[in-house]
Image 1 (tube, one colour):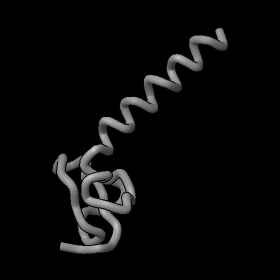
Image 2 (cartoon, rainbow, N blue to C red; image 1 turned 30 degrees about the vertical axis):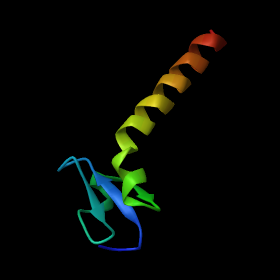
Image 3 (tube, one colour; image 1 turned 180 degrees about the vertical axis):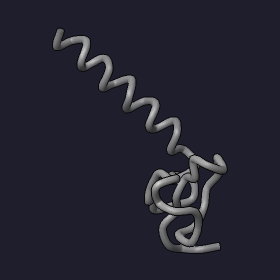
Length: 58
């Protein structure tokens, strides 16, 4: 496919090349298709870390 940027589409729940859905519906860009495929997991891990950091501040 493309050697350009990759995105994870939140509307269709799949990886897309640069030419895809509007950016408002996507996470990215990512350098590889594999990185884009892990976007939801990466976001969940970051959210958990931020929640734990907020709890530590309380």
